[in-house]
Length: 348
Length: 110
Image (cartoon, rainbow over the protein chains, first blue to last red):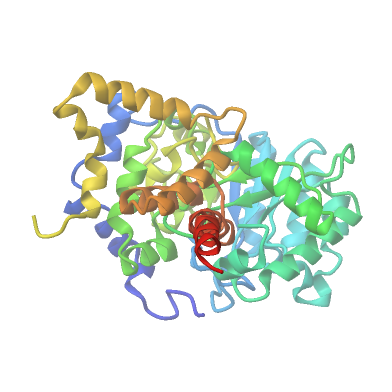
């Protein structure tokens, strides 16, 4: 399967996506009105604690729901120059967490250099890598990634939509489940996910279709039991994440006739507590080219931060960013539905 | 009314209170309490509901509990096994009555 962009699909155009999201069929409720009703509009940051860095859209997988529209045919990749600007911000503004994502961040040729430089700044910075697992087995040059993660005390967060091959492969591609299990075994072998090792391995569940995720704690219990019983695999926590209606998932919703029903479901499940805790209040998302966004989803919709003169990592202005208004659109209902959703799972 | 069943009617379930509110309120309170986590998990209850929905052949319930079981983290294999439980009980209920037929047939036969 090729990316939407390679297929010149209209859902690879952020303007078109926003047009669909703002379409009159959803006239009933505006996300901004919902926030206003609970005293949260305009939405403002609380404190910038997390820098989520998209190191490029290149990936060895082409997942059906990918909001980045990542894949082997995507060539956008972060340069060392942009990484240096990120390092300066991390150093100067005492960022607590650096969350590396993609695509497959490990496919960026400067990935290891970047991690080493971040670690040099401080041993206490939390470095997260959103590893798709199969990258570890994709090429011999990646086989030692688990050791590399361990050496730099990186927290590994990996998607595993289900504990069966049929569900996982239907979302992430043929053979992905088997390779993911092998990669999880390799991570467990060196201590990741094992009690008291201090090496954190978290998994991400997201629904393989037009429905909301189950309660995070119940799912975690189920995953822990099944992965242990079937494969003797251990992990720390499970994050349940809602699929946001953008990019490939939006294209799926519209083409399968599920769009209206899904949006209705998200709107009905609006949770003020989840709205209070949305991740964009503590996060800045950096695009592969250094532009700044309120979150990874706004990044894919090309909605740059509303901070004058601080829209690029090279012109970072902490005051302007902390005082900015977070840009919200209809897709934001995905982060406030039910128990809430963020890159760290449920928010309420 | 063109058909007896319209998927849109499922959303109107709460409207039964328009014709008789006190009883509807009691029913929905009870319904909500039944599906809370208890000695059985919410997931287990959802699978039971899905099986019962098939046993009573209610299209609204099948629709609702297909969504609900998926949203409780069940997969299609588990859902189909639940329906087989319903089918086994329904089939078994027919078959176990054949003992009456056998009794009667034996009574009448030489």
